[in-house]
Image (tube, rainbow, N blue to C red):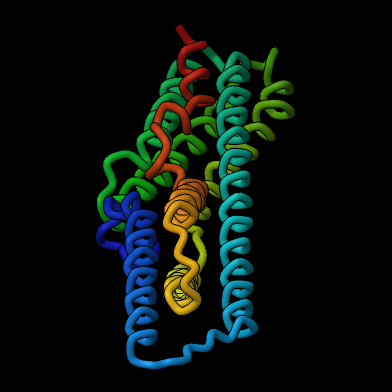
Length: 263
C-alpha cells in the first residue's frame, strides 16, 4: 500500500480505518444477504469447513503481516540507535583533530543529525521523502570528505589516534547512515496489503452471512471483534510505518539526547 499511495503518503495513517470500514461493510453485507436467503429459501446451509479454511488463511496472512511489521520496526530502531551511537563516537573523537578542523567537522556532524531527524517530517508524497533522503546522502558525503581530510591534517601527536580510532568510526558512521537511507523505503509489496484486505473482507462477509443463516447474531461479540481487529490493524501499520504514526520526538530520541548532551 505504501507504493500504491506513493503520491499520498499523508493518507497512510488512515489506512487502518479504511481496512476496518471495509470489514464492517462486508460484515453487514453478508448479514443482509443471509437474512435475504432465509426469507427466500426454506433451508440455508453454511459449509463450516470452507469458512474455517478461509478464516485460517486470513489468520495466517494477518500473523505474517504482524510478524513482518514487528521485524521491520525492530530493525529500524536498532539502525537508528547505531546511527546515533556512530555520530556520537565520531563527534567525541574529533578531539584528535586540530582546533579549526574540529569545529568544522563537529558542525558538519550536527548538520547531518539535523537532516537525519527531519528526513521523515512533513512528507506528503514519495518525492518529498526522496528529496529529504537525497539531502541526507549529500550531507553524509560532505561530512565524510571533511572528516577524512581533517584526519590527514591532524597534529603529529594525535595522528596515530586519528588514523586508528577516528577513521574506523567514520567508516561505521557512513555505513550506518547509508543503510538507513537504503532501508527508508523498505516495505512489503503492495500486493500483500491488497491480499490482506481481500481476505479480511471475505472473512467478514462469511461471518455476517453465517450469523444470519444460523440465527446466531451476537452484536456484543461482533462489536468486540471489530474493536480488536481495528486495534490490531492499527498496531500493524504503526510498526510498519512508525514515522507516520509515532511522534517525531519519540522516534528520534537517541539523536535528541545526543544534541542535548552538547549543551
